[in-house]
Length: 50
Image (cartoon, rainbow, N blue to C red; front, side, top):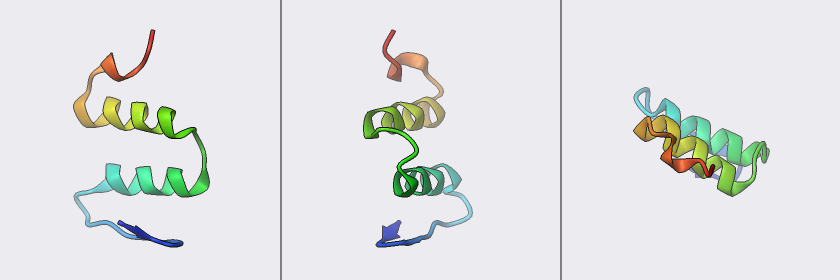
């Protein structure tokens, strides 16, 4: 969960927390971030385009 610059998550939501941090830092494009999240959430390369 994020609200402005505050990002929080429970201990079992490390992936979701990381996504919010990467989004806040603008490390990747939103599309790349969605692909990265899909890869680690579902363990499938289908989220990345060939």
